[in-house]
Image (cartoon, rainbow, N blue to C red):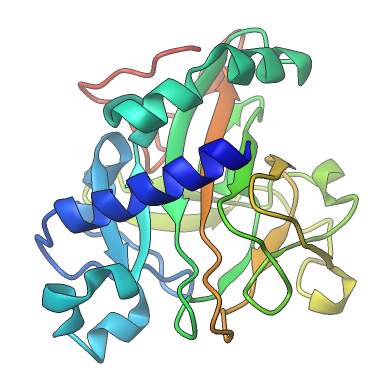
Length: 257
């Protein structure tokens, strides 16, 4: 995995340099995104920027790699390097070992935790955003660099994978925006951050996240970046991809491993 870590890190930087800045789309977990740029990114490769970019718009022209938050969300289908890795035999074998019968990758992201400006990601469950009936989402998260408490590693609430999916982010009926609604009453006290445990790991490490597991990451206040690659899988056998999920396949259909 370290070889993947280094090559993917370089590929990520090249993608940032190559992709056009069509608009300043700021990624934030404080406010749910519902603009057209975000909604169409589900089956595309697009850049999203840190909130700091609003204060320093000149960086988007000269140093956009320093304020990019993430690249998403169809790297696993559209970029040759990420497709080759994400659809490799080893990933399929891992998915089968995890109990999948027909694993389908539906979302991928390169997540940048930039030095000093890398934003926080608030506590959430991945199935909130990638919902199937019954729930089947699993996140594969690779550290492209060492992840520590100082530079914004993952924090998880142990045992919360047994909790029901609390909220869901859905498209509005007209498909032009998103909204959040409560799927089930809260059966996990996810708001007490002192109950979470940090997942510090070396570059190349893989963290597997159950779709119901509550997790978050803090703002990176250090001088060391903390980049990662994530790939989310769902079960394609005897499940239904929710028709009101924010991410819909449209013309680029989901392709099983």
